[in-house]
Length: 403
Length: 133
Image (tube, rainbow over the protein chains, first blue to last red):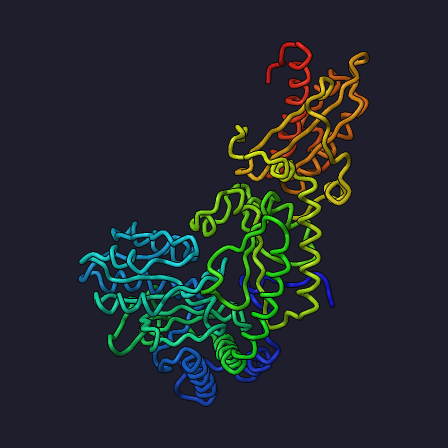
């Protein structure tokens, strides 16, 4: 076992060697431009891109023609939101989303607001899920789209996408989802789920960085988005730019592997995750954040009360995890996702996100459990808040001196 | 972010973690910071009433590695100092000693504040005017 142990697979994943192997020829001998229609170099590249389209389409159950390649999910989110806002300007200008979305969605929505659109940012419930009634109540005759992520990147909570898309259908508005964390990890089926636009990324599914896709429905209804990058009219005119052939080949291969191995991986990962959670829950005053019922199999977000997140990160330096505390930067803002669930700032600060992955072993999980337990126990012995809690003092009655 | 060796040393081997009896007249307690800000320091001193010398110092800190190191270092420095000498401790000395980066300067400010609060608590308990903050 090598240290440090990587448990941050929701931030990014290592590339699967099988993906790299598939990509290599397209970085060396097969360097053609997929848009070159008049020679064999171009044909080979185009063939590879078409094959990747099929691999992706199979994973999410769509037609290969409905895949638009992008530079990553941030671009896909931007294209879907800004592109639909422009394309459907004659029908309305209102978008509904949620406060726990990824910044790529939230900031694209901010841009829409600057361009004269209106956006409703719904509060999730305490378990992280959006209430369907809240979506329905927010719909106006100006609403063109609901954009709710499939699964959250910090807490792994899976939304009721079927329920959301049913509302969208009823009101004849688009159902967009940022499915970066869900695709390849749990079954995502754009037909059964009723999705019109879906963003996905390569590097979260053991594929390369710098490549992603946007699924754009072609039938019932036929959806179009206005291009955000102008040029040669690639990707059915929705996304210009020479295709990143090696990246696309890698994304395709990554999707195929996820598809082939999803069932066994889900069982293996959720088994290890549950063990991790059960063991760490034995620490007094530790809380699992977000719904445990509707959740991705490989993620756990736990708050350890009365220890501070960054101090905890330092104590668990042998494992690479992410903290709900962003105070490594100059700002002292805790995670906006955890805050949206109603967590107090101190609980949000004291949280760790564990993201297990394809290459995580049982031995590594065991190591992480002991490492975290030791660090939390040590820091609590050093924490004045823990002592006060143990003495039965209500911390909310103390007048703190804020800086 | 990379921590200096000294911060790591204080974090791994904190000096003087613990609690003094805050009811004692010879003990001064300073509690500064707020849980919402991610930093709470409690620094305590026990003063020899005859010599005005700090004979013991303890801390407990909820915070990042730099906050823990700043308070640990402060207790080390406080022991054996007179009250007047303790009051002269400047946060920039802590910054220098621990090589704190700019975003962590507030940890040293908090430690200096904690020292001043502990001294004031001791002064008030002993019928002296609190010093200006």
